[in-house]
Each structure stands twice: as C-alpha cells, then as structure tokens.
Image (cartoon, rainbow, N blue to C red):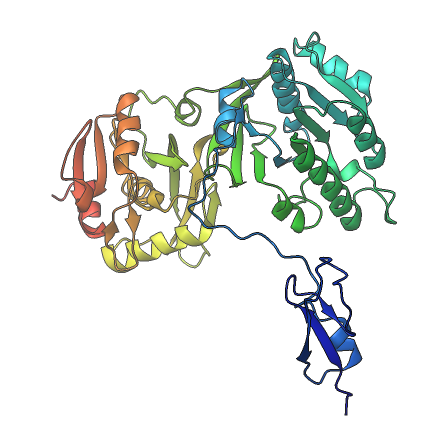
Length: 457
C-alpha cells in the first residue's frame, strides 16, 4: 500500500509543497501554506500531478473590448480577397501548391508591391540562390523594389539576423521544407525539422509583430507535405491550384482565423507574371453561336464570389453486353452516380446501356451541391439531343427522392448571371417567387424538370 504523504498548499497561488515553510517558494507570500489531506498515490502519480504548482492565468469574458486587427494590403486585389483583406500583423500564413504553379512568383510580386508601399519586407529563399531570385524579379519588372533578399536554410542564422535589427513587416520563407534547426537531429524536410523550424519562426513572428508567410510543398494527393500539425500552428492556410497546361490559377483559402474561408483569388499566368482576373466567369465559359447538346451553365459560388462555369456531358450508346464507362473531370464521381440513379429510378431515363462522360470546362473543380440540377440538365440534353437554351442557367440540389431543393445565395447567383447576359434560370420552385434580373422557371421535382427539358409540358 502506498504511503500517505502530507502536502501543504499555498492559499495564494495554489503551489504544492511536501513540507511546511513560512514563505511560499513560488509566489513569496508569507504564512499561506496550509496542510491538506492528500489522497493515496504512488510516487509517480504525485510527481506528475499537474493540478497544482503552476501559475494562475488571467481569465476574461467574451464581452471584453478587443481591437480589430490591422491589415496590410498587398496591392494585389485577388490576393487580398483570399486573405480576407490583407496580411495581419503577427500572423502566420501557409501557402501550398504543386511545383511550378507560381507560388514564388506570386509572393515575389506581393513582396515587391508592399516594399514599394513603404513596408519592410524580407524574402528568404532556401531553394534558389539570391541571384536567381533577382533575375526573376527583373523579368517581372520588379528589379527596383526595396526587398531585403537572402538565401539561407539555417533557422538559427535567419532569426539571429532578423533579431539584430528592426523586425520586418513581412517575412517570406521559401520554403519551410528546406529549413533546418540545429536543436534536433534530422535532415531538412523531415517531420521533426519542419515542426521545429516552423515553431521557432512562428514564435518570432508573434513576439515581434511580423507577418510570416511559409511556402509549403505538396504531396502526390495535393495535401501539404510535412506534419499535419503545421496547418494547425498557422493562422491561415492557402492552396494555390491549377494545371500548368492551363492559363489560370486559383488561390483558395482553406483556413483563416482572421476572415472567412472558401474565398478565392483568380490569376492568369502571363509573360510578366501572374495577372489578376477581374471576371473569372469569362475563363470558364465557351462562346457558342448555336445550341450544343450536353452543355449547360452553372453559377457556382466560391465564398462570396459567384463564378459561372460550363458543365459538359456526353452520352454514348453501347451494344448490348458491353460494360458502360463513367468518366468525370472536375466533379465528384459518386455524386454523378447518384444523379444517374435518380434519373433512372424517378424519371424513367435509361443510362444503364450508355457510357457517360462529364467535364467541367476549363479544368475548374466544382464542390457545390447546387450543381446537381445543372448536371442533370447536361445529361438530359446529351441523352435527348436537345440543346439547353444558350441564354439560361440552372442550379439546385437534387434529393434521392427526386425533389429539387433550394440552395444558398440564390439572388447572388442570379445577379452574376444577369450581368453576363443570361436571361433565364431553371431553379427550385421555392426560389422562383420573384424573377428579379432573370426569368425564372421553378421545378418541384426532377420529373417535372425532365418533362420541361424533353418538351412534354
């Protein structure tokens, strides 16, 4: 049986001592140690008890006054939109993307513009020599920007240099996988090195009020390489998406402690660098002089920004006995299977003997459930060889029962479609009460929508 030990607890700070003394060793208060009966415990449990011996922390209510964080705009409107208005002082931002997608180019452009606005900017490259970064800056027409440039991989050397003078307003580390901390063993890029280097850099940013930007590599499946805790340590996580074979790039906010998530910034890769795209819908819509079967326009929503994309479908009849194929690009294949099942079970359309191909034009990826009705319209048009009117859009969520359900931000989607010259919209019946900028056709079930598409009513 474990021996019962006496303990003396300070009534001022809660410190625990195993013998009485006149003055508390932690808070220096006199005559505050009072003997309390301690429960039976092993020496190991008593040594590792964390319910005493610590410092008292200050607790405050939710109604306490707090100032809104000040933003540092980059001068690139699309970049600021994805950040929620710009960089926040003493914040950490992680940006990831495929190799060659344009992460370093975008950050160099943002760093140069902020430096020309009077901000102090430090750019540390661990992958390229300083001369290589200078050559890229000249190619982008930014060679005269007062950006402090260095090429280093030692976290200790970087922090020692930055601590010697006035801390910069913006610090860019390209990339965190090349940084090395001499406090632990391991090569750069390992889990332990990435975690240790990030922790030291984030601590410096929080203490000195510097906005920190970490560039991260990605794995084969598109997730940021390194420990998952890295995404929890930073305040903002941005994903730079796009195909190198396509012209456009999308900067998407995945996490943002100082703003909303799912905001996007759209860029176009030009000879002089990444250019902003003020009207991203123009990138994803094709010009059609005449009706084309299997194509419909869907007003997607990215954060607070509506983006019109074209959904294309192709249905190919097969000989009996052949196994039909389902190919999807830019949408969830499981959701396509669900829409096909509802069309067969609830509407009497047969896709079991046909190959189905679905594509989102321009390489765009759609995750909005409101695309269900637009996908169904493209599939019905391809099957019946009846083109969808070129001046109409469609959106709505389709349930397994065949019901067409309303979706969020319908007026915002309709307003964007009206600005681009569309005149009609096919929507759920609950959203067809007021036409607004477009003439609306409401549908309660997918069966009614099929009758409308097939010209039955």
